[in-house]
Length: 430
Image (tube, rainbow, N blue to C red; front, side):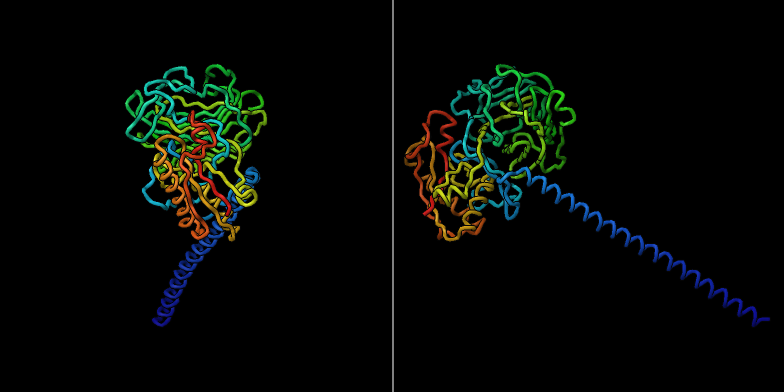
């Protein structure tokens, strides 16, 4: 009897142990299956995401024409050359390596430029109009003259702009304190006007428009619209919530907008904020005016240019490339980060043609004395050479430099637009 009880006791213990082991095994098996499933779903999702990204990249490429650049290597940004260019936070160094995603290249032919140097302090700027008020000011935040606006008014280009399918718009802007005591934000609008002589009212003014808006707490966003039946359902909108991209009061920002047919890309400093392949899918949209409105800011160095430069053809075939896409601060020789897109393309041409040697020549406008301008232009040419060598590994032995100062103008130095044409960098094939 005792033996039987002992055997039953062993069987009970063994069975219980087996049952516990089975439960443990079942739990381990379930966790393993869940992990495998999770990892499998993750791999599948990664493949889906990759496919979506590839499809979107292909869509972007189809809208770029021959101007889309490879998004490799180091990056920076770009701007225009000469004395009257914006003064963002660059350090006194010959090497500025920034984000590789900055692929902006400014248009070749300047059709509108205003740094407000021709306007008297306290006056309203000559080339603009308003339904409120505005004035030219100076600031300890940056050099040069600035157009100040504050309130619910709008300030727009007085004359209509003749814009083709492809063009670029750039400006420097400093958000400032508004009438209510804090940063007020602002709107920048590119639009197709209805009334060529006056102000187009409404939240969606004109025939169509692209609005870049900066909210009072610094968040950047955009909105596109096409008025009329053909625009129903075609409007787009979006914003960036990244705190690193929010603008701050009393800080300067360089905004660059690149329009290629229906595609709109917008950059803030060295960052591409928005890329809209089909911002305006209706072919009847023809933008003809820009305006600043609804907020408080200082604006300067407004530049609109057309035509995508064919750098390879001009340098290799024609033997001379004139570029306005290499930027410096006023009276400085440091290449600004906004220049990266242009210099990246020039470096690619030089890399693809290793036997080609070039001479870089700097030019200035006539502001200042001849001797200082000649020296400045030589130092700027040398700085461009260093940038190409340090950032793109172009052999310095292939490059010589010189500076002509103001001695070889390509336009009269009689207004801001013509002066901007004289501030340039030339590459001569040797």
